[in-house]
Image 1 (cartoon, rainbow, N blue to C red):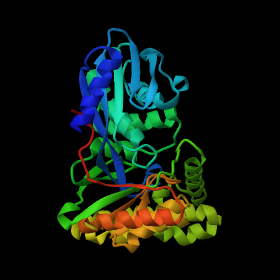
Image 2 (image 1 turned 180 degrees about the vertical axis):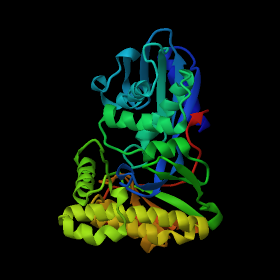
Image 3 (image 1 turned 45 degrees about the vertical axis):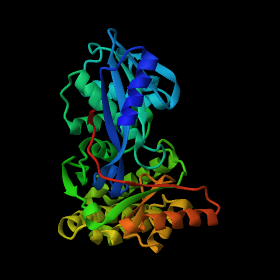
Length: 385
């Protein structure tokens, strides 16, 4: 991390001509289990990872906000008081959307000082590891401190979600921002997406001789486009036809009635969410009573549900999961919103290299582009560095 912090400080100085006031960072996240349950007011179990987005911030004497980054040539600039979702475009909609969303949560955007921002990241983009929430959360904690807003972490998570929903146009839930802001070393965040109550669950991977391997397929996805929105619409339809406010209000006991009431596709979408909520609860219970060696079958079942019922997997993800399982993984599943991105596999530490080699070989055999594989550890959430 020290290297990227140095790079961010140097990049800020090169573009803006002065040293930054401070540096903040926020992690990406891996979702251990609980996919597409968040916007259905269900349960999720993500954890912050040791890949971070770093933001350098400098103060200005006017009411302008400027944003630059290592991954874009242009510097975006706008008067803070003129921020609105309609005026935000491209990658800068993420950080500028956070500034706007802070205004929706009480910040007087006509009175706050201007700022310059410079952003770099080690969170892979498009891998399902929530590079977007890492940007939003890093910017949120930076502006919250510099603008002296005093907002708590749960509110900042809602700020990030609002920015992503309205400024970026992606209909995502609150899981990613919550993980990025609330994470702690060697713990997952057990989040109730209805009440927003959260608790930390010890993972204990290292103590059990396990590693969490990420397999980034390189298949890009975009949550602002159709597949994600279509799944959300199916869930809302299913809840309406079942006569409940959200799918959170249904349990596995409701599945026989759902099969009678719903068409086949809507039923399968609903079945995924209901059973996935139960798998999250079962995973939390297993981690707390038996430890991580007991959660493999739940991870495997989650992937089958996403592949067959929710239909958000792709051949590359299926191959990554199947190859990991066949070569000694405790459990494996795709992670993130789907249609590409990454899979995760919980593997014995001594088996990491073997699984990586097997996955590389399987992808080559199937004519797929080589994936990127790396291990991640559960890390602390956003803060000032």
